[in-house]
Image (cartoon, rainbow, N blue to C red; front, side, top):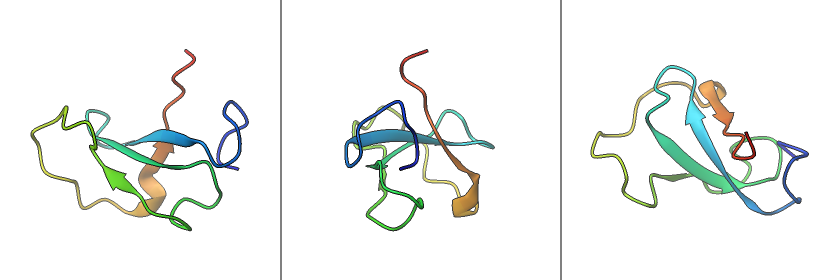
Length: 64
């Protein structure tokens, strides 16, 4: 699991540590990248996807 705050296999939100205004979604299955990663599914941001490394993606804790 990527986070213990959400059930295994549930979709969770990710952001880039360098571009916190950008959002991705993936299933809560470690490591990041072992399943599909979807960029801005809700189309909230009009900016293009960044070119940062996969390791720069971090879990958004929506419970905070």
